[in-house]
View 1 (cartoon, rainbow over the protein chains, first blue to last red):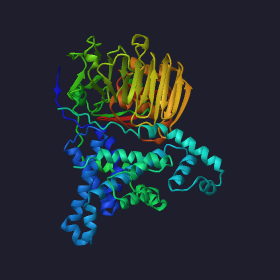
View 2 (view 1 turned 30 degrees about the vertical axis):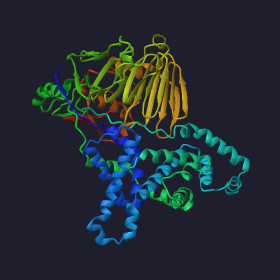
View 3 (view 1 turned 60 degrees about the vertical axis):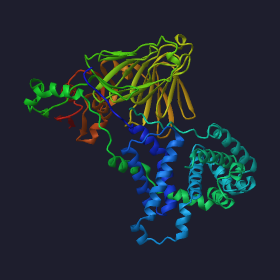
View 4 (view 1 turned 180 degrees about the vertical axis):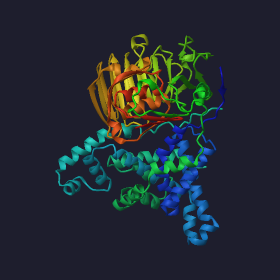
Length: 186
Length: 390
């Protein structure tokens, strides 16, 4: 063989897969700590850069999410605790204690995970169906939805049935995400 | 530390309940949160204004733009294409003749003479990069042999041996990648006997052997490939499946071509022999021979029409066959094979059309001169690896 080369590659494609799946969620998650979307984006980008530079490897969906949410949370808290930030922003000790709690972290993860899953699912539905499911999540009853959209209750029921049928495969494997395994070698 | 798997499972269950308009019982019974927190979670998920405010923030995140920023910040690994050195050496001679006018005696005075400076353009050749399951990369170039336990290559084609050891087939399947750079082409015979021709700027992922009786699955990550699939009848009825980012093609044993380039929104699947099923999301489309499906990956619409298959698959036989193709499309094809950048000085030339067959071993000057003689273009310039069409 003319030439062989040992490489330790973190495939750009797998990295992009993680980015595509989690970037928006992580930004929205970070925003609930720092209350500024642009700042949130910068912090999330910093975490992504670190993942690339340190060639961090993940085995599955849980591993990648555990790492990313935790890393973003830590980045946010570090910033909030920094002298520089505290000199310009006024955050009470109580508020800071609240953000430091594990249950706050878990609550924010749950909200982001559920929201992004619901949005992804609804986006696969036809417009009318999607509209009905959204109203239904907002707590409207079938007659209320019917009145709101100026259609019959039977149509609402039929559309819901249609939606569940379409969503069934998604709900069954709970939106099994792509494999997050990086193509890497020793 | 906290285990996030419980949280992810819980999130999946809550999402499913809300979508089905059911009470999220799993949240109610969860011990991870206080009642107050549970109430807040449900409110944030179902309250109209909470949802609207989230969507409002979401709309302000441009993940495509941010990806570009991110990409510029990370230092993407650069692959070294060793074959380039060989190509460069072949061109050195040409560099001494800085200005080289092609077929001078054939050209009339009123035909613009092409300006050629430091022409480094050569036709493509057999070359590929093989990525083994260990991550090791092997540069496959013409006339170079490489042999491993389960494969051998002669610099033109790579052949995987069928596994005869029944114990082996129970092991975890290892995947290899074959990457064809711009200016390259390569062939591969998979362990089941399926033969694949790969065009320039393409990448295929495949298992080094297939599980007996299981669906044989490969992935065309991008680019163009022609498949001559070993029949299912020879593999206990196992189907063959080619997946791609936006579609999958399922076959029993047949010949077909898939074109799915990164810079094109359309994925073309052309059937030569047999029968295939093209799937994309909830769409499915059967093809019969001489039919081509065009999947628009933006609108997710599949169109099917009759084609002259020869034009679609001629590339694998060393020929470009253009049937009333626009110059823009033609130059896209040529840019992959000659690894060149093409600039149209006049936009209107992009829609000029051409019918004809060109050999892939022609020099770029020959091809451009043919276009010039046919009055499709007025002239051209070559500088290093760029072509300007006038």
